[in-house]
Image (cartoon, rainbow, N blue to C red; front, top):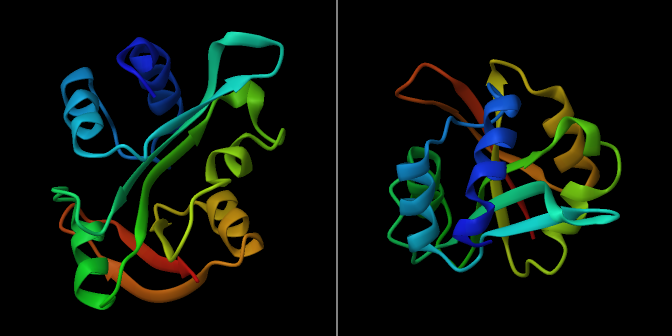
Length: 150
């Protein structure tokens, strides 16, 4: 993921709400500066078009997301927290999200919205082997399921 991908990431992010937290250019740039684990997948047949993106942080990142901080309290060892994964509408059901996850190693963690519900994300993560760790009520009024895959 580079700054050249920002406009397309922001477009995908806007279309993916409320399944993903809203991003603007300033916040995306801040998040990019905190981790080298972020990635994009390019559209099949169009190497210039972003099909999806993933924002991830290792346990030691200087990230302050509420769900990430909850995992720091829950899990004693190293982990990779997937903060966001979003796929362009016309690229869904083409394996883009699975490609974004490929190569991430160790204990993987994520959160999935229960309120507002995100059943597609829940099904995707369970199919990958993620299991529930805890339910968290967030400061912004959402209810999320904290999940991990070992």
